[in-house]
Image (tube, rainbow, N blue to C red; front, side):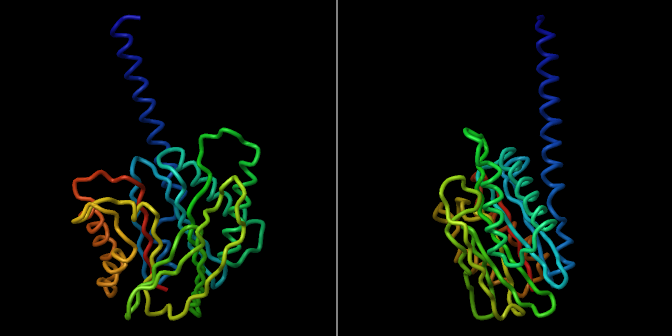
Length: 264
């Protein structure tokens, strides 16, 4: 093949790769709810979604059933295309649950997800996908403002007038293919009306930077949010994006980032 022919083939390969990248990116963002949908169920809310690359392994799910609304954030292990593929698998599992099962409690939803993903990959050896994920699920009754939370290696951050409270989830992830616990606890929350709540992917706390070139701690991030507790969520979003960018500084973003803030 001539040199010019090689260049044409290389150019075509690059163009096709770009098309695949663009398609994957569109598919990734298309399966996620729009930010404004949260405003239909919560008093105020925001979503920050910053993949490390063109697509990411962080996703979120929103579902309503009568007066109850369910919000889940999940961080699939890994980054990029393979992690984004797991986003679809988790979203499809949640759709299957909604369509065919009556599951009300956040802990039971985590248990369903775990068993569903385990069953899907049970007989598949040497797969390239990391099947496990960190997941946090909130259930809110929009009338009474009663709230429940369950976490699989994910916590819920509650910021209120008197301070910060970390509602701790289980240490285990969901979707691990080995021997693994399959029960998760639903935690009832009180005094939700005067609080802000935040679900964060692990990428937030993997960011390296700040004055001491260290990772952000949950308490540091909570204090930042507490100082802006009375600010509208739309402003909190831009402030949080700036805070994370300032913390990272000239360092490269080393993980996917997702933050969901909301008021009951």
